[in-house]
Amino acid sequence: MKINPRSKSSGQLLVIVIIVLVLVGIGFWWLSSNKQQMAKEGNEFGRKVIQELVVQHNVKFFADHLSPAMRLQYPPSAQQDLMTQMDRLGTPLSAPDVQGDIQFQSHFFEPNGNFHAHINYPTRGAEINVSISHPVGRWQIDEIVFTAEAAR
Image 1 (spheres, rainbow, N blue to C red):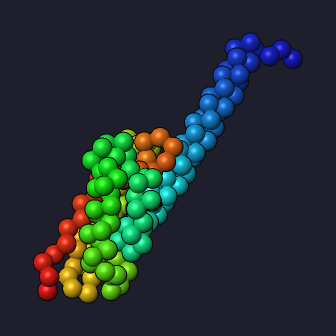
Image 2 (image 1 turned 180 degrees about the vertical axis):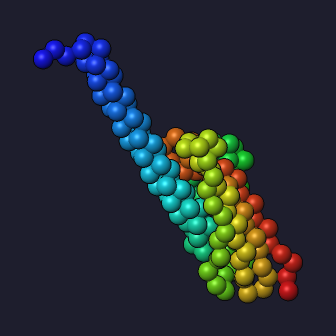
């Protein structure tokens, strides 16, 4: 019984194709699960930023998570001014209802998110908008806008 050399090489080619397809499948699965994890972490971080700033008035958390560009825009005195402005409004009447989500610039990479909340204080309302990203290694605050409404 003789084996045709042609069928032997086509069998080897089939094995290589199967191995490549399995590796591509594993890579796609890993990227998809990593994307889901990053989206979950980003949503948690976006909500935590608003919680720490609006409810806890945590200036250390704010300072520790600013992006390099935001560090220039918010030096320690500006950080303290923002916390003082929030302190003056008092404790929110209810937990802020945070809206927002994470998007990816490319299909699996460069996650960023925009989060918004309306806060009800005893004397007035306020709006907060926060932009976050995860360029390398950790989540950071890229932009923050806090606007208090006129007194009721």
